[in-house]
Image 1: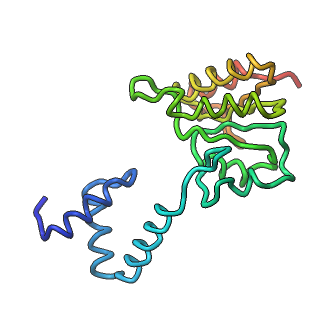
Image 2: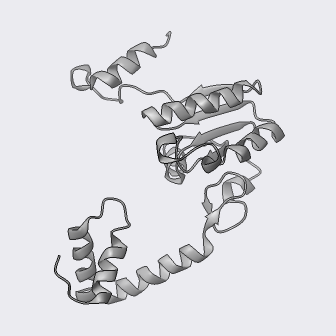
Amino acid sequence: MASLSPNIDQLIEALRCLPGVGPKSAQRMTFHLLERNRDGGHQLAQALNSALENVHHCLRCRILSETDLCKRCSDKRREEDKLCIVEMPSDVLAIEQATHYKGQYFVLSGHLSPLDGIGPDELGIPQLVSLLDEKNIKEVILATNPTVEGEATAHYLSQLAHDRDIHVTRLAHGIPLGGELEYIDSGTLSHAFSGRETL
């Protein structure tokens, strides 16, 4: 790619750190900010700087927060005996928007992946173990993604909970509401069929 100036090249390269942003997209964003929306660029820089300075992980659940304990962990009205374990902070928002769940959360910030060097310590498992040992948790809800790594992580976490006689449930996976069997991929259909429930 041809170079215009060191500052422009630096901005293009910096924007490429975002997921799904390749060289062309980063170049388009850079030109848009410099040519058409410098005010937006200043707002973006300020917001990014402020977030990077002030946002960290909640000391209890590990979601992103500006305070030591996030608003969910500080809320005394939430159920203390249920703990939903998710991979990413965005999963908490998805569950909160789609369900009436009012229990606690624990955010792993990833999944077990030995090939990538991601083991229990990188996922905060020692902190989770302390939480399971200290709190009066009666149910652990495993809400990891239905990927190979997510399933392996769920299996590992279920063993931790079972060792402490804590009831473990897993989010159901299968046919989406309104889906038609002939259009469902075979892996999803197989998983739904083997996990069928009694009515």
